[in-house]
Amino acid sequence: MNSFEFPLWITLLGNFGFPIAITVYLFFRFEKRIENLEAVITELSHSLKRSKK
Image (cartoon, rainbow, N blue to C red; front, side, top):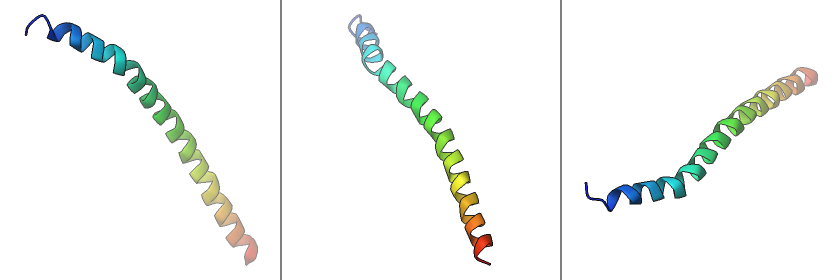
């Protein structure tokens, strides 16, 4: 490994590490909310089907 690659990796990590970390955090946070929303919509659908009978 020559001396040029080490600072390049640090620069890449600095430039892309933070945006990737934020993206992963938001993905997991929104995934939980989407799952909750899906459960509520499913329950609403079942409730509507029961009320039509």
